[in-house]
Image (cartoon, rainbow, N blue to C red; front, side, top):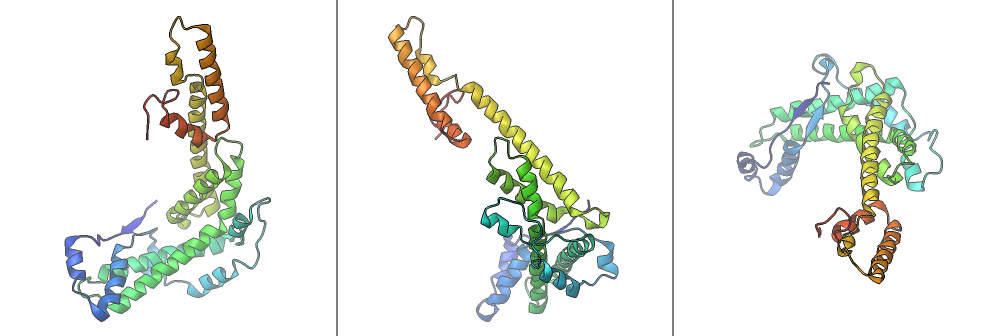
Length: 279
């Protein structure tokens, strides 16, 4: 996958010196120019951008305006706030391809305009045009994410019997979904759902596997308390019974905590293999 990245360093001494001369009425131009120069513009290039493609604003507006017309099949038993995220309808192949192409074209256009802007003497119209292109690209990106939220929910539910909570799984799934929208190349002829499904599934599988490994290790450590070091050879039976009962009580207490809380307690009080107190 080929990606184009256009960026500037707004904190460099030369850039700050050029911006420092703006004041008063030029302050807004300075802020807009600084925002444009600081933007991280990453897009999937296409030969059509340089030859004939000029954008499909009218068609894109029609698609974006129709996304909430039908909620489609919303996953069952979702909390209201999650059900609301799944309210956008699904896109067909042509709509999806058009939105991705338009999003990347707008970023390409903004990058080209920024390359022609002189930070020491910016043209306000050019700066505003570039920022509007970036804002519209962000709107399309957010819409693409919303139309695929239910895919993230569906994949997260398939791992619901893992040690991870559903909220953790869904949070990671949405994060990967957002990343996938930025990296997907629609020109290769595949549907985005195919690309995102594999990316999210792989990420959650690695996450669940690592969590299960940590859980297994902590379970094995449950019998190995720091207190056992006090059980020296020759201890009296009452002392042994006392420490055995104490260890049992601590085990019962820890089982009432969730995975993260158990980990924090063990690290804080140097229990099990966590011999060093971590504050």
